[in-house]
Length: 158
Image (tube, rainbow, N blue to C red; front, side, top):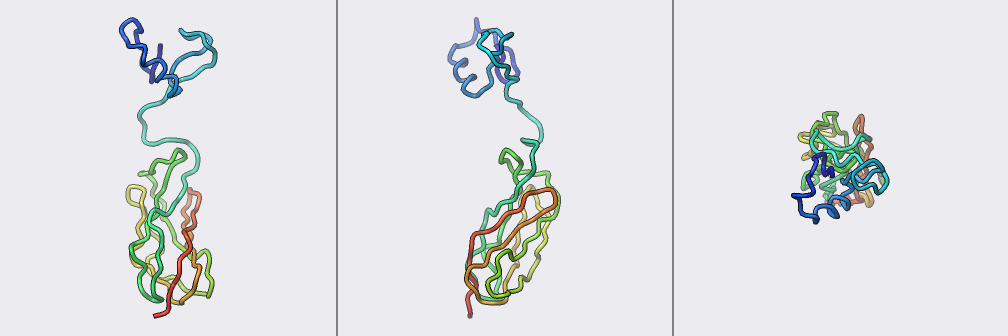
């Protein structure tokens, strides 16, 4: 039997592994396989630098919070890059850019709006918006990744 690309001698292996391996979709139960139960399964690949082959996606891991107009939004906003299976893509190097996606009163975003991620995470620690308003939403974008929108937040008058 093949389990996680290793062949096991079932004469010396507890049968408890068989149901577990099949639940994990890692057992070789193909028509030519030792169990003859139908289907072909190559097992679960182990190793490599990340999962999936699809597009990376961005998401806000620290959302913007309410702030006073002209003051820095705290805590620093963070955006993470994830691969197609949800793992942080630590090798992603394209700059992540923050913009105002929903701008209820024409506010201007100031601060460092484009940051290269470090180990898949970009931190924006000096962003501010200059006009009070309700329902601002930020957008994050990067070349080679699907963008994201933040939760709604407010900028308050002093």
